[in-house]
Length: 498
Image (tube, rainbow, N blue to C red):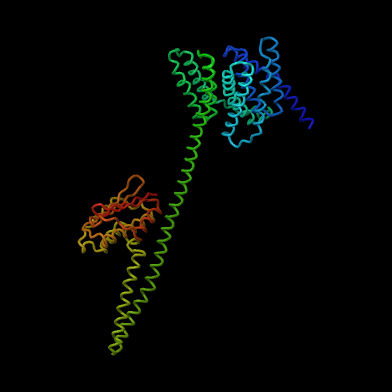
């Protein structure tokens, strides 16, 4: 405990001369810019005190206040300054209370800084009003100083506290040092141009100044978020303060606007980029999930067709043989008996078994058409048209199929055939058409199928089980199905090629 206390006291003693030197340097710069020795205390030195009290550990607060009082005492002994300036430091102790405010992200850090800036500026304005001075001018000077130094010193403090300080040794000496000269030179050139424009811009063209100053702010905000915008605003504020020809209040308002613009624009651009990155990551996750779903759907289609094939094989082997045996037994029994009633019953049994066989054969064809195993998909579609007896019904069938079927995987072939099977069946049942046209073509990585007829498809289409099954099959593979009923029915299907 004693060692920790002595270490803290040692650091406080070392911090006092550093704070004195920095405070006096900032006061000298402020006096040169504002042309007022008294108001200069409220400008950059106020921003320094605000930043150190807000970011430094609480045990450093006495050293910060002592350093300011020491420099103020020396200035009061040499210059005619009001003694009430000693009250500025105690009035800033409200900032210490904000250190206890827990923050979870950097947006709350910025909010905490904003509240602390307002409290500091208001306390300075109230003191100036008590002294009989211009409270508005004091408020602007304190606000400009805090906004100018607060975010910049926070970035410096954040960088210093995040660095892992290691003792210098042989291992450290052999480590490479990456200065990133390209970025340093680019930023120096950018700010040199900004300073040059401010210095060379005629008074009559002063309205171009905000546009010139906004370029580095936007660029660094895009590259580095609100921290880059704060750095650009800091350099722009220096250019404004050095080359501005405005009166004091206008200069302070310009500095406040420049720093607020940097923070707000940086936060907005960084927030937009974060949201865009989050949306990009979400889209990538959704795309990966969609791809997995499509792959799973293709596996399910293949599994379904495998089950259909097995069921069809079992029905063909078992039911077909049994029905054939029943017909043979009925025929033999009819030949062996002379009973007319029994012969009639056996004839009915043979006829019913033949009907069962025909129904089972139709069911087998719907479960797994053998054409898919023996023929190409195009030939299977032509055979399907022949089985539906389009020519006998007076329906002209046109097929346009200019694609190589090697591009299709098994799931895609099965889906195309099932869709065509259902669509052509609907043409024969409901369309009353004299012409049906099937077209298949490819555009980039998508396959398109169109089935159109010139039948009585002008009424709104009723969505039945067949159409619903087609849509489910297509959407399971990541495709789309649409229907139109103008001058007949036109079914359009689009499917992605794997």
